[in-house]
Length: 366
Image (cartoon, rainbow, N blue to C red):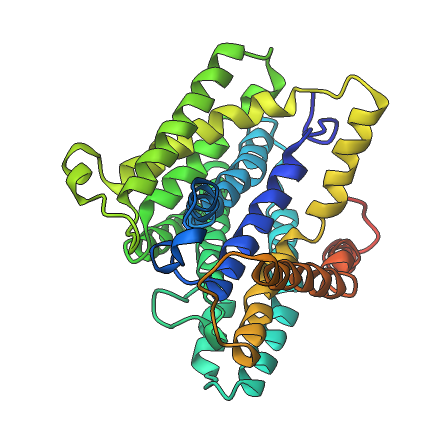
């Protein structure tokens, strides 16, 4: 089965849920005080679970990284094995995927920063566009979630360089080797654990073409639970003192690796869970519609939430109907704005890609 023939069931839902959870986590921080500072009546078991779930931002971004490794890195490996890798196609595909939605997202962030009278920097803008935020520059217009875009850009860069090094002539191989060194140098300034997570995602891609292995799926679920628990114990909390447990728990990086391996093992099993009914197929298809604008949602939600916090700066010390309503409205506003930005930009990515393909190859079909 080729990559073109394979439909990855349920991964669209995974992509959207990961983006939605990042929005929910950031929105919660602007609505309520920390759990330990809530009124006594609001510190219930249910609210504790809610606050615990909505503090795992890095873990949900990790899902994006592994999904990227699985779909981009895994397909790259497959094309190398089949001798169908085309550098120009790869570059156009990755460039349009990243920058078609990213450019308008930066304009939106700049507009919000201007409205809120925050400083704007051309240096930060340039650094953000080429994946140097968190390395040499800060996040442009304080759109902090874009730290993850630096990782994605350099994942793609390293993947392309490695493919060239493996398949090209000696001159290009030398350039690719130099590029690999540059990429590795960049990751000395980033957290290399996320690169390992991307590689783990890519390394399990082949399993989606093999017979489903329930045992590996169960093992993956177990590792997800263990890795998530370990990462939460290692995460700083102002409401719960977990310092007594830290001596028994491995580092945050080890916890992330355990979690990454678990997710990477579950993905190929998930893709083989073909819907057995028409309703199940419809549910899977709806996930594709939501996932279509998940990247734009991720890029645009933080400036949207900052507007809320700028004009409604106070935070609630109780969980009640009023605060829950404002929380829901913030999330809905991010979803609506993300969809509106998606329509004229990210949705047009295939058209932009086709134009660039025609420039590169004339009338030749790819």
